[in-house]
Length: 80
Image 1 (tube, helix red, strand yellow):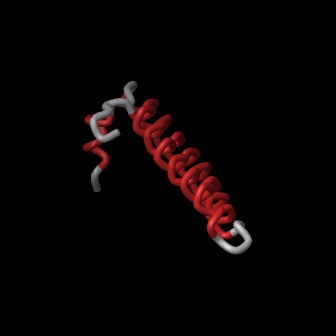
Image 2 (tube, one colour):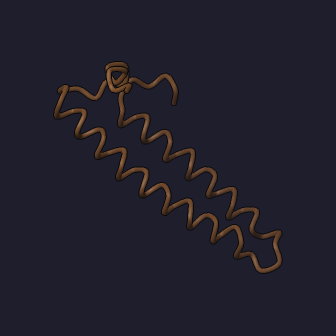
Image 3 (cartoon, helix red, strand yellow):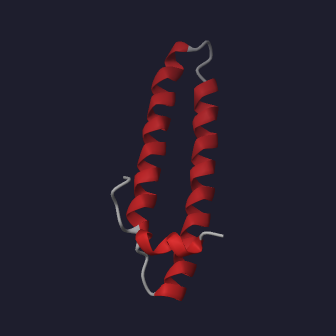
């Protein structure tokens, strides 16, 4: 995930990591009393991932409109 040069590939890697965490939460919810604690936490992670994807895609589209590429190495000019 850290060696990707394409912004979309980086976003996909982050989403895969979050989905893997959700699978673990659901699998281990079997060991709680009601089994809902981890499922509710996984639901919050899904909502967080959706918001992160929307903001990151908006940033990627804006960067592409300005630089005609989504190469992550060229994003170092965005530093304040």
